[in-house]
Length: 281
Image (tube, rainbow, N blue to C red; front, side, top):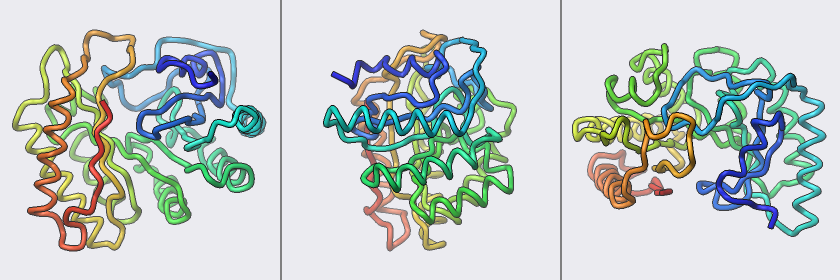
């Protein structure tokens, strides 16, 4: 079977620019694009991150990426496996790469010509939004069909410090996320896990819920809206295990149910109850 187990993303740490992976959230085969084949480059240091330490003498090339993407599309088509999406993720924060704009244009062109049924996705922690050029690029691309999966792992500075371990301040990032939600449709993605044996405190869960409802209102008022909210759990091994550990599925489902109720009570009228809240254990 072409789609292997959940560990099948290991190819990206061997210098691969395009790697197939079975994605829970895509619910099928995703072709990942890796802009950092030489070593991990990220503005976050999440304790659950599944990228293991590695170093390769390989440099990213848009031309090489295009060829690998075309090869993978031909390969999976021969095996009759549908491609759910072409996704920028890889060994770091894609939007912080200087190659990202040209790579995005190339991937969109190939998707349109060779796999129009597949979505084009960016998985991002949002820090690339601080670059004005990248911000405008993403707003334009979203209007043309790019799916932006935007990380929101915390509702308080304290939990953000544990989950992101980043020099980027929580308050500054949230302000930028609010600006982005007012300019482009996004999907909110939230990892729920234990850190150092502790689940998110009740105050953190309540603050996150209020923040998501606020973002829904900002998006709706601007005529954009949040396309979906993805709540997902830790399901893959990470180099820092057991610093982060999986939570019971029931906890994830309870958080989702509470958010759905909050959106119905407090969400904007034209969004009330309409935003899909999805759970991926």
